[in-house]
Length: 340
Image 1: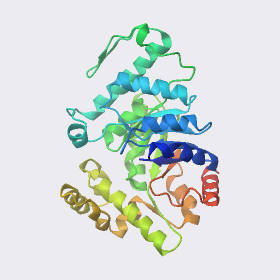
Image 2: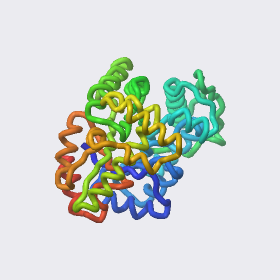
Image 3: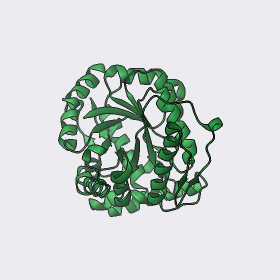
Image 4: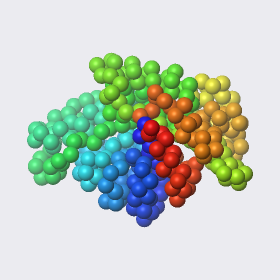
């Protein structure tokens, strides 16, 4: 397995030092989320200050940006990163698309399918020097002149990964994506019983096989050395589970384990704006279902047990990693153990 770190949000001025540190510790990749800022700006900074690690979005929200805008971004960053860029895209949920981004909601699976095809068609037009002629249900793109064609890119097109939770989106990932981001709110049972079969159905329908798709799993971890660290880490893990669990789109994960009543409770707290109470609504059983709970020295073994045969990349959640990044001995040993 490859071992990565994800940073959902970070001040841009802190990105260069973080990227250098992540690369020096031996991580394989660094991902940036789109929560409190633009992840592409962070990738541009990280690309300038690293030489080896993969850099990607996990994930950038696709629909607020036209496929043409996304194609330019992906083309330029792949060149700047010297071929190390992964374009990770997500659909977001209805409420955010309508009320945060101000767009009309459409069925996300066919929309994202057309979106990915459009981005690839634009790249092909630039790379091959052929007329742009993409027509689908959602996009008609037929104008590209030399003046608006970017400089040649010596690197292959950036791989496109998508985030997927429910069955239809997982099948889409298997059919058309280069990789899939498994949502941080997941259990081993959910991945084995729902994610893998739907991905396989998708890649088989497209005449592909398992090698065509990289499976990326971001893990919520509760760990610590001493009571204070344990308490802080467990609270953070509970808060993340509570935040994600309050979203109706992710209810399927909770229902799979009999947590439907907890999903209702979390949704009610979120609707009332009582965000600080979400962590306290997560019982111990739910914490252990959706997070890896282990002391630092056991984390690598627990991750290997849980994700062997599933994940191609394991991603540590950078908002609250199991150990600070200055704990060099822990990270080097953990990364080495996961790669063995």
